[in-house]
Amino acid sequence: MRKAIGIDIGGTYIKAGITDENGNILTKQQFPTMAEKGSRDIVLQQIETAIEFAMGELDEPPAGIGIGTPGVVDNEGVVFEAPNLPDWHNLPLKKIFSEKYNLPVVVENDVNSITWGEFLYGAGKGYNTIICITLGTGVGGGIVKDGKLIRGSRYSAVEIGHIPIEYKGPQCKCGNYGCVERFVGRDYIVERAVKAIKEGKKTFIYELAEGMTENITPKLISVAYKKGDRVATDIWIDVGVCLGALFSGLVNLLNPELIVIGGGISQNVEVMFETIEKTIKERAMRILAENVKVVQSSLGTDAGIISAGALLFQK
Image (tube, rainbow, N blue to C red; front, side, top):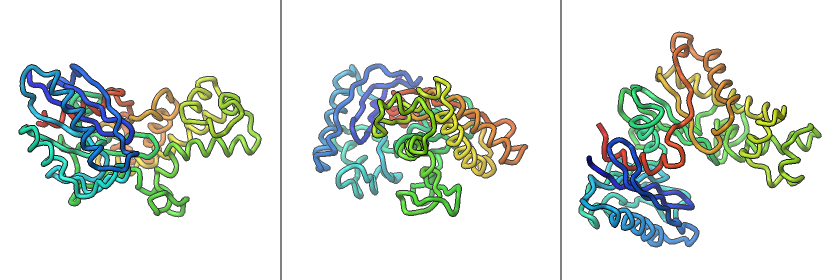
């Protein structure tokens, strides 16, 4: 069975592993990205260190190296821009590592990569058209339509987080107004909880935060929700309505069979998933909405490695 090296580049860590054609991880390790050093060469050296680790675990040459990276990536593996990595402008990532290791190298945007991994091995296996998003500080998205990743004419399609759901809404960090990310990104979920506390609403959230609003996180809000906290429950319902409104438009546009939601924020919040499905059924065209499923990502914390390796096993 063929094996591939999967490299998942994050702002804090670079994760490396060996995967097989069935999406199994045979070995893995993580290394600091060192983006805070402000040097592109240092980050590239860390990627090389990660690849060298994986190469050292193989007893035969791999099918190739798959790299999932933040930013806008073209079909030649050039990263046009990755804002959270130092000086990653027009960086020929594929060329650098294919020449160094004389192996096939595939470079893809990280959420596109995860979408492909979910399609091949995860929650999307067996489906034809899926939408995948990751919820975190921002909202990333990818789409597989009729078995193919949608990339767009400028290789930067599916900026799901910056689709407006309220045209007169609050300003987003991207400069636009009413983007879905402005309602469901990490900071804005926390903002809701802080506002409720300042309004004097009774909630476990403040107690769990030890009386310090700066300690509030989406995970803490999830803990409060599990305890039956009304404020926390209302927050997750509101997030679900916002995401449901977004997906209603996408369901009408793409007629997907499945919507996959990943990222740390998506864990352990059943009411959010229930509200998303309810909102889609209320707002999307009935014939398109009736069979759409909304599920949690099944690849877990190893999604980046598995998905990067999966880039070598495209149909």
